[in-house]
Image 1: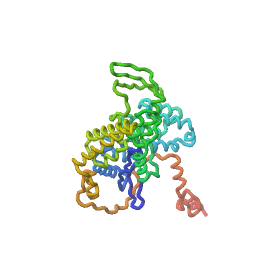
Image 2: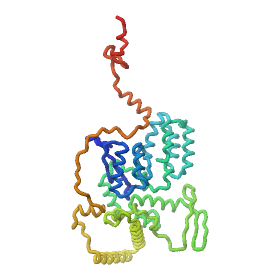
Image 3: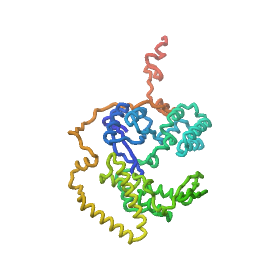
Image 4: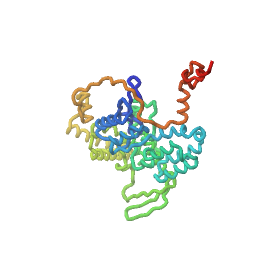
Length: 413
């Protein structure tokens, strides 16, 4: 994105919140889309955040391809799949772009998250041979870059739902506030009598719960046990899912599972993820504290799920929480955010304070011509050629030459 007034490049940093929605949490301004500018920007981002992301998704800018591994040494760099696949129609021409069978065959290979690397490579080669695309320059380039965008190369990496939903142009702050309000005052309808589903409705945000609910329903109605084996106090089941894949599930002889074990609950998908950060509980380098807090939240929601079947149990749980809260207030004293200035609150939240004065001046006007070359389709080249204004000869009023090279000048009169 380019700021027209100054010719600056606006670089947004977008992540996924606990509702699995895209949220822009930082932006940067650079004068050019070159390696040096991106390296400086990523260094500033790294300094401000205190860490680097586990995965960074960008377009195919060649400058970013150099800058990301240079600054984010441990980060996996991935290309945006939708951006690549949206160009297929232009690259293959009018005939194949309208061929539904070709589109389906290519999508089955590219978008399939269950394929291994070897299975993808075989499937890709089959599609290229069938539709005579083996020598196509763009498809050969995309195959050479397959480790940057094909899901089979990222099966070992937690992606945080980055490709689950696109935020869209209408996602505003009020929408995020609405999502938080829905989580606080809305309890989704259960589709099964299982207590583990009710526990999921309390633990997760509404959007994430619906994904978990679909898994619970599939596990209840689309799966079947094909074999079981008892070894002492442990029972081993082989379960076949709707895709006829067989999974091994192990149970001990303990009590019935009525809630999701805490080790399987990812805190970023819970309704209290943002609350814990705002209260300042989550600090940099406090992985052990975060695990303990996650276990505490899981135990609380488990108690609430079980107690919700009886009003008396809910009242007892509420009374216990009030007593514990009173003890905390007596021990630590009340916390009044209004007694601190905004500056102190920000410094406490960020664990840092600004050094000296900060001066912001208008940036110099820059001439930005992009960060590298890319392959242009035949359609783009035709449009550019059609848009060029041809020079007209002033002698004969014809095109493709000028007056100096006009054939009329050589005619003997």
